[in-house]
Image (cartoon, rainbow, N blue to C red):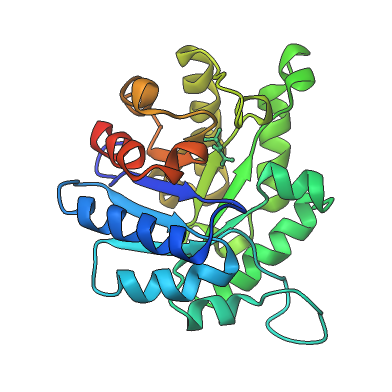
Amino acid sequence: TPGVRPLIAGNWKMHGTLRDAAALAEAVRAGAAGTGVELLVCPPFPYIHMVAAAMLGQRVAVGAQDCHAAAKGAHTGDVAAPMLADIGARYVILGHSERRADHAETDAAIRAKAEAALAAGLTPIICVGESEAQRLAGDAEAVVTAQLAGSLPEGFARAGGVVAYEPVWAIGTGRTPTEPDIAAIHAAIRADLVRRFGGAGEGLRILYGGSVKPANAAAILALPHVDGALVGGASLVAADFLAIAAAA
Ligand code: PEP
């Protein structure tokens, strides 16, 4: 999208040791100088503080992969958005399909988490995307539109919120939609954002996620309304993650 700085975000999921995280962060930091895009890494909770400290004053932002909807309280094992902001996170991925599946997260729950993120000064990256059955039934756009309506909070555009389109069947599978199919969903998401938020929706970033690799990144990132990528597997290899960033 013209005038929009692309965001290349790495979702490290539940991988690696503290040493791995430190080495990966250092390699991304060292390679970040050469890219004109915004870089973001989202480590597992226990490593966020260390990675954020390593990225302090650097060109790489740090985010989390989830947060709780409450700012504090009796929620054993959960992590609050203000805690994430406190340890240096600036973004939080919400509603990833793995959380929707593993933790039965609904659109309403994701919206509540996004409100907590906004209140804590974090930028939410809200994930939407259809299953393979929904795609085959011709329902991809309707599914995504319904997810957006249910999960984006009121203050989303004002805070520069990010949408990630991640077809569930493309995550970790090596398969991606065709370029016209990606462009069609991204155009539908843009139209939806503008309908809901007016002019502010024009400049919000819409990321594509699902089996983005160095080999397909340039073609995908050149599509209209693709303003970056959410990268899973390839974000665990610094050279691949940086190659994707260089393709943007
Ligand atoms: C993801 O889970 O956000 C993702 C895009 O994973 P992968 O790149 O491994 O398909």
